[in-house]
Length: 138
Length: 500
Image 1 (cartoon, rainbow over the protein chains, first blue to last red):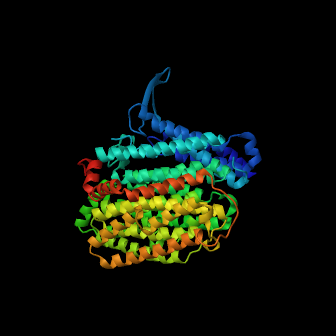
Image 2: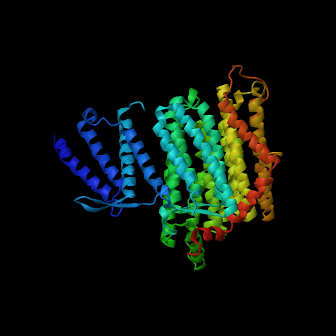
Image 3: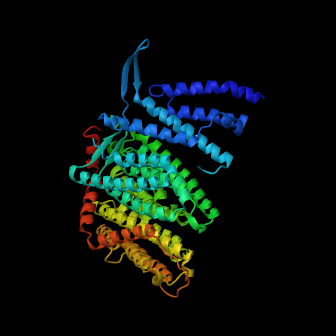
């Protein structure tokens, strides 16, 4: 009971904090890996406290696909600079004007970090589920 | 700045991920794996040609100039090894398509295969010693996965497989910890991780009398000795090679061993140049490895285990040449490395064919296979003749070059010990061949080998024969490699361009 209440309270905070880490990553401490590990730990907690059936009735995500698509995003952002004539893995700063918000700068490192985030979340959860559930690989 | 130097790593990584995506479509997946392995082979060849004509190629990742950023450096040594790697991987891949079980091939084997290639290519190319650690880990993690992949037909029990993998896992975790310790101490001492800058600073610090650099070098020798399976660190190898699926054993003995040896070359000829103590240790390791591997191979009856010990013994010759550290000796080492990569992977693939036909691993219970499969008999004979160092095969020339280098260095006792090792290798290799292919026919079951299994063996055997009959192009290449690898100034100049 206590565990359920605390988990319910903590999960939003943790996920929000992990998103902060993800977005802050390229010029402050944080980044895709830490954020991913944190999000995965929230899911692990949900699995532990509420059980597999409950969690999987709410999120019907194939974690393997998540990891793979993260990988693809990472590779896309790693190779994108090549097209623009920069070395592999360069971070490219896009800046544009948005109405109401003013000037916004977006680095391609954010995309790269997001890919890493998905890879970490996806692979940790895949491993957890395989080792816990005894399911056939698919 | 060259893009070509980054492609072997980026290409194999991209392929690995795409193979994961395509796991629902096995046909496309196989096609992609073959296609991109061929492409990687041609990239490696193009890189070799480019480096030979245009000098050392350097790629600065994300455009950060060294010594701050991570760099990939392709010199003659690494691009030669990249080409061999791509070739051996290609042979092993074709073999796997016919050999491995369909389900594991689709789900984990093919992606892991290319992750392994990423690790190996990265380890050969990186110019940053911490990055090397990362690529080693990529390599090892994928190897663990490949090792426990289920062999078809259950020739190897699950318990045996898990025991070997566990041993390998624990040893490599210890190895990784020691390597991290060595890198950390090195960084604390010199303040840099860039290999070119390390090369310069280590010389300066040593001239100033800093003593513990020798100890760091010895730590590195232990770590790379573990990877290369040098004598006191060889004990994991026979179990792992025996229990791995055949194409994986071929890659382990053909390529992964050589990554350790490659780093030993970098140790004696780039990072710790002129450290006589370190070279002497490597020489002694080499001698011990030759004798120990040879004696152990004499007593084996399991065909893959015999090949595993013979591969240990052959690594000894390689270490002997590396320990001498002269330009001539390094050239001999590279020739040996290239030919052993081809021969040993070919022998493992052929041995896999033999066990596939006979359902038997012990050579005591085999015999008379020459009648039913002359192709395997001939290729296996080519392999063991090359391994034993008989003409007209590439193994003969590689041993000749190594003996020449030892004699020129004036260490006659070492020549004697190496000769004993070479003699042992003739005995155990021929015993394996005679017991397997000659004599009374033990099994009469009619089975045949698919083209997937025969093609790679034939391909590697043909290369081995070609390099034995026309060795001049490769000898030319390796002597250039020897000169370039043992002159650290070339590397330092190409990477730092005057900044130290």
